[in-house]
Length: 423
Ligand code: EPZ
Image 1 (spheres, protein in one colour):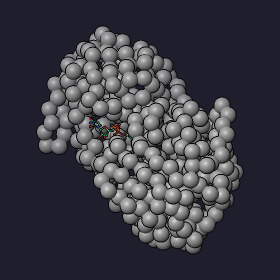
Image 2 (tube, protein in one colour):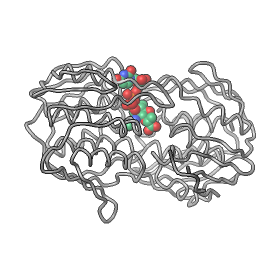
Image 3 (tube, helix red, strand yellow):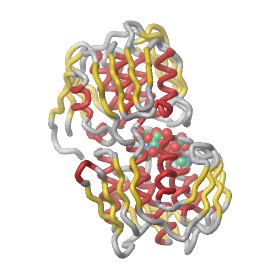
C-alpha cells in the first residue's frame, strides 16, 4: 500500500490542469452497455475507479483501450454476453451499480451485487430499484444481489424520494431505451448528470431538463456510437484550489468550469481568499489570514459533500470557530480524528463538526480512510511543520490522477513511497 511522504510547510504556486471528472466518466463508461456501436471518451481520467469499471465492462463484453493521446475507446462485443456484475467487482467500487439500468434496458435483465456500504455511509439503492420498478422491471433482492428483468421498459413518471446522483443517472440511461416518455422528478442536478445527458444525446438519446430537478426522456429503439469529452473534475480541481488557499499560495486551475465550482468559489471568497475566474480557468491567491465560516453540504448547487473534508482542513487554519454540517452522508467526518493528531482542534457531534482555529499543524503519520479524507490529509500535510506520511494512498488513487506530480509541479515536496501490496 503506497504512502505519500510530505515535507511541510510549503506554498503552492503555478498552474495545474483539471483532469476529466471521475464521477462523469463512470456513468459514461456504463452507457457503453446501451449501444452496439463504439464510443470514444476524451479526458476519461486514469484513476483506479475507471480501471475497475473497464474491468467490469470487459466481463460484460465491452472491451476498452487507451488511444494515442489518452482517449478511451470502448467497443461493445458482437454478442451481448452476460448480464452479471459480480460481488468481487462491485465491492471494489459502489459505482458499479451504474451498470444496472443499462443492462436492464439493453439486455432485458441484470444481476448486480448489492454495493454494500462504505466508509462514509450505508449508501442505499432503494431509489434506483423503485425507479426501475416504476419503468416496469421485475426486481428481486436475494443473496446480496439485485435481480432485475424486463422485456421492454415502459416510460412513466417517477419522483425520487431523495435527489440521488447515480440514481438519476441509472434511470436516465434505462429510460433512453424505454417505450415512450419518462419524466423523472426531484432529480439530482450535479454537472456530471448534465454531462451524461450530453453524451446520451450524442448517441441518439432524446433528453431534456438535465441539470434541473425534472428530466424528460423520450425512449428510442436503439442508440448509435459517438465521441464525447468528459467534463472537468470540479472536485479534483477544487481540491487544488483549497490547497492554494491554505498555503498562502497562488494557483491557477486550467481546463475547469468556474460555474461548476460556484459554491466553493463563494465560500473561499467568504473566508478571505482572492478568487478570479475566466471562461475555463480559476485563480486562487491565499491570504495571510483566513476567516472562519460555517458551511452546510447539500445537493448541487449547494456546497458539495465531496469538498467537505478539504474545507475542514482549510478551516483548521482560519481565525475563529467554523461549523461544518454534513447533510448527505452519515459518517463523513473520519478525517477529523486524523487532523486532530496533527494538532487541529475539532469537536464532532453527530453530523456537525466545530473547527476551532487557527491551530498550527505538525507533521505526523496519518491514515486515509476514504477518497476525499485522503485528499484532506494531504492538504494538511502541506501546511504542517515537518514530515507527514499519509498511508493507504490507494484511496486517493481512486479519484486523483497523478496527485503527487501535480502537487510537485506546484512546488510541494511530496513523494510516493511504495508500500506492501494493496489489499
Ligand atoms: C455520488 O454518489 C458520487 N459518486 C459521490 O462521490 C458523491 O459524494 C455523491 O454522489 C453525492 O454528491 C459518483 O457519482 C460515482 P447519492 P451516490 O445517491 O450517487 C441517499 C466521491 O468521493 N440515497 O447522490 O452514491 C444517500 O444515502 C464519491 O467521488 C438513498 O437514500 O450518492 C445519500 O444520503 C463519494 N437512496 C443521498 O441519497 C438511494 O437509492 C445522496 O446519495 C440513493 C441514495
